[in-house]
Each structure stands twice: as structure tokens, then as C-alpha cells.
Image (cartoon, rainbow, N blue to C red):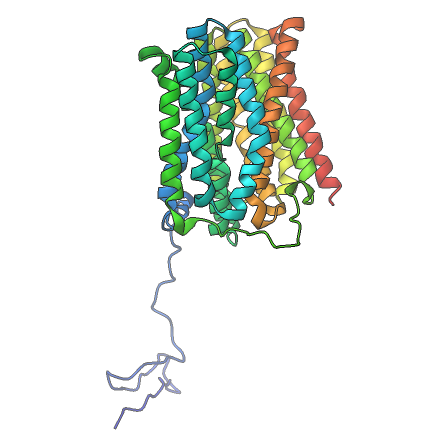
Length: 436
């Protein structure tokens, strides 16, 4: 016969509880008396990045994504060094790389649309193959002294390269859409990864081209791109579901999503900040020292991105974005002040380091808004569109910085990034006060 469970009882005259003996195999319930158990200790706060990569497959696709993105900082530098060394013309080298940038701006959104519609693995690899073959063809044309027009055609073929950064962010969104904190950390990590690739890529390209042979940088970049995309797309468990086209229904363009036109203006102006700052710095310094101080700006953004990812996510990214851009506008005045105060390029180094720390929070917050406003089935296309706007801004900022340097001097050119950052701030503020 099973034992009956009986509660503890208190004596009417005693000050301490008196326990009624109960069998060992029966449960015990207490109705009074002081507690002798300690309050549970608060668990230590877990590293947000450790929590981020705890999901299966995240480390593998991140490694592949980094390999595939590293060439993005290598292709242009490698092509310029290769063409200028063998053909003796920096003008030709610049024109070829500019053609590739224009072709990428036109082709990339359509490639991203196909990725959203048919899946990353199904589109990214076939899109990478023509880009790799175009790079190899460019090397062969340069090596065998082919006509100049062939260089433009070969480099334009690399425009089919998929936006690996956008695909990686789409995977994080798929995994952590219901966890804003983890998604914020993922976006910050991706921005830091972009900065790291654009910090290491040009240095690696210049090293390969100078120590081996002029074509080494382009060949290495093509190999890294193909390897990285294959590793990335092999991780099928983390791939977002494809969004097939519904017959008779026209898909809504990400450009028509609420707030997207304003965000495009913000990214266009932010790109102008980067392009103008690069031209102003190069004009003020020699090639070697300019590379070093620009790397410091990327380092500042890289460190700030990692730090920003460890902080709580914004409850309202639309409200935080103008604040981040206003901080960027203020910090962009530091290089201008340093350039006006002294002719030493090394005085720019700490100023650019601090200025770079403002860009990552602004970029992360802007990307968070894109993820919120673009439909899930068009996310990769939406992020590619804003990256295209960023590239267009870099080109425009470079042109504006170059014109200002030639007509007003390199010191005045440092005012162009301030104006561009102020324009981005104004556009973000208008988005906040005139919500659709």
C-alpha cells in the first residue's frame, strides 16, 4: 500500500516548526518555517558572439563567406597594378575598373533577385563561374597584349559575382528573425567582416602582385572567390527558403517598400563619405602612407562594429539612425581639422581611426532598417540594391573629392565627407519625421 503524503505541521505553543515523520519515499511539502535555501545566483552574461555561432552550420557558412568576400577588396587593386605595370597606363587601368563597377551596379540587383527566387546554392555558383572566367580571361589578355577593348569586356564579365555579404545577412535573418538581439549582433559582425576584408584585401593584392608577378593578385582573388562560394553554398541547412514567382502575380520591387527611397539616399550619401575621404587622404599622402592611414580608418570601423554588436539592439532603428549619422558627421570633422592644422600625414592617423569608429554603427543600423522594411522573399535583392547605392555614392564621392582637391586643394577636400555625412543625417531625420 503506498504511503500517504502528509504536510508539515506547527505546534501551537512552540516557536519552531515540528515536523511529522514521513517515509523517505514520499514527497515533502512545506507550509511554513524559515527557508534554508540560498537564492539562485544570476547566471553570468553569455558572450553574444558565442551565442550567435552556437547554431549549427553558422561557422561553416561564415568561413566560406569570408573567403568569398576577401577578393572584393583585391580585384580592383590587382587589376590596376596588373594593367598599369604591363601597359604603362594608369588611365587605362582606372577606366577598366570603373567599367566593372558600373556593370556590377547594373547586374547585381538582377542576380540577387534570381537568388531570392531560386535559392542561393542554385544561383550563386553558376553566377560565380563567369566572373572567375572573366578574371582569368583578363589575365590572359594582359599577358598576351590583346587589344584594350578586350580588357573592358573581360572585367565587365566579373559583374555576375553574387553579393555574398547580402546572402550571409539573409541567412542570419532567416535564423534569428524572431530574436532582435541576436540579429543585431549578426549585422554588427557582418559589418566588421566587411571592414576586415577591405582592410586585408588591398594589402594582400599589392603584396602578391609585387613579390610574385603582376597577375598573381587577380588569379588569387579568383581562386578565393570560387572556393569561398562553394564552401558557403554547401551549407544547405542555414540557407533561407526560396521564394518562387507566383504565376500572374507581379512581385513588388524592394524599391517600393516603405522607407526604401529614403534609405537609398542615406546609403548613397554614406558611400560619398567613403569615396571622398579616400581621395582626400591619398592626395595628402604618398601611396604607402595613404594605405596605412586608410587601413586605420577601416580598423576603427572594424573594432566599433564588434563593440556595437555586443550592445543591446535598438528598439527603434529608425530613431537611432539619425543619431548614428550625426555622430559620424561630427567625427568626420576631425580629419579636416587635422589636415588644416598640420601638413603631416601622420596627424591624420588618429583622426581617421576615430572617424572610422562612427561608420559601423550607422551602417549596421541602416541594414537593420532594410531587413525590417523589405519583404523576406526579396531580402537579398533589397540589400544588394542598397549596396549598389553605396557603390554609386563611393564613385560620386571620389569624383567630388578629386574635383575639390584639384581646384581648392587637399585640405578643402576633407570637407566633402562632412557635407556628405550631413546630407545622410538630414535624409535619415526626414525619414523619421515623415514616416510612410
